[in-house]
Image (cartoon, rainbow, N blue to C red; front, side, top):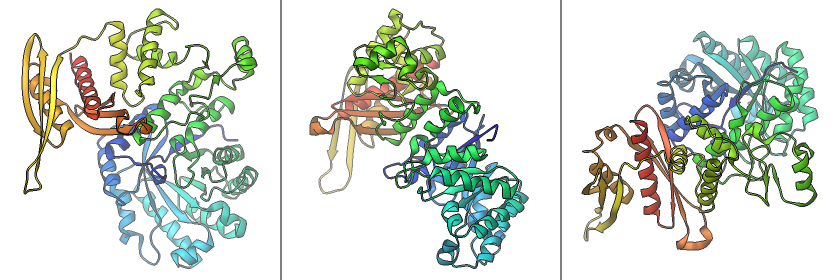
Length: 520
């Protein structure tokens, strides 16, 4: 088994191929920033040139400094029967300006002859030419051997030739891809050992979860000597998904003693953050991070856990940022509160009246539909308000919006009126916008700008709406997530109401309050 393992995240490419998963360019940047902060070693941003969002991501990523991760562009080997220098897709990989590039190539003779419709010899040349060309341009090159395990079953000799071609051309790492997700761990371990022996160096592993053993297959490859695991946050991906990094990272570090250099106490926070940006519900039964992962419902289990936790807990929940929940008590969520307060410079003691007060408010709001994982600014304001450390910059007197359709034309007008009390002075403003939320945002800024000129530096970057109790029909509650930026950093705020405008207003106000608090 390798002494060290790197984590390669493909949430922003392979993950987005999952049903119902979509990220805006801003979402992708925010996810990448959080992954980098967490300590992930490689972040695959997408396929340059395949769509405008991926192109915009790489353009934006090139402007940033990354602390831990290598941003990686993904593509494929050159096309058949053309020179690598003439392949536009390969050139786009270089244009992405990433330090690392991952290219996928065909391993399975079936795909080579039937899909690519080239000879087996030409396929080997396509692999070696592309790797050598990218290495000549000073890129770290990872070679993804697609369908490797299916191919190895049918033609182990040719399968080994493909990875040897990539290795001999200078690939920094050969990654064996269990693309169809149907192999079993014993076979993955056996094949991985054979490839390592053939190449004389470690390989990476990329698994899918179609057989429910994506994580198990990746662990089997690590036991065989693989030194990189590729996967996605929360297991997003095509069909039933990829190897779940949220499960495999703590397993490697806590169970197998492989130090990844990551603070796993933020694991649950990371999992929930990505779920929120993807706008999908959290899996309450997710290993390590789910709400139910360390929940004990009663009877003998509760009695045993209260005496000796490890009788029914395979790890200390605090190690992965989770919390033991005894359903007959109110002891849940304190870890997140304490971590956040500490980051704000507000030391709190677990079990203290302040923590209990904050926790009670968090639980009340969560029961109403609030989620704070991607709304870190609202969460900070909540803590500060409960501790009496957050002064209001302004107070709302009233607001309303109107929407007018002009007969005989396709034009429409949305207008917002806002009346505030700012520093003891009433401010009354009116503005128009592209819809009620934009109009409210503009009217609110217009009222505040004379008092707080610094708000000219910030702007709204993203706006998401989720219906959180759809069974109520038109009376359903709505959760609004707003992302704002001042050009140097971004922050999220949340609002909840049965009225989408009220929820939006709450999130907008929190965003401004947070910015003004930080700019003092």
